[in-house]
Length: 74
Image 1 (cartoon, rainbow, N blue to C red):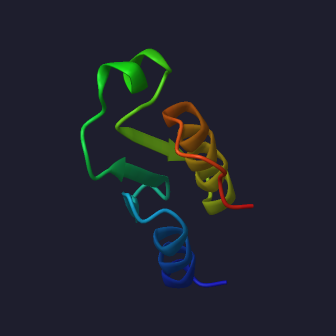
Image 2 (image 1 turned 90 degrees about the horizontal axis):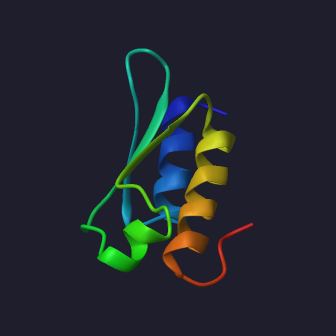
């Protein structure tokens, strides 16, 4: 699958995040809205990164669980 297609799919799955890949080939996501105190205490992060698209998806799902955002996409 192409780089652009991965970006588009992840962005659709996680609409509250901005997704990109750096020049160093790391995958990144940053939340659109600031965290509240409860989310910070739960271990939520404003920005996360991973080695590949699937790693980023896993981290995004984990962040959703930590933030209490309900069921995460498969």
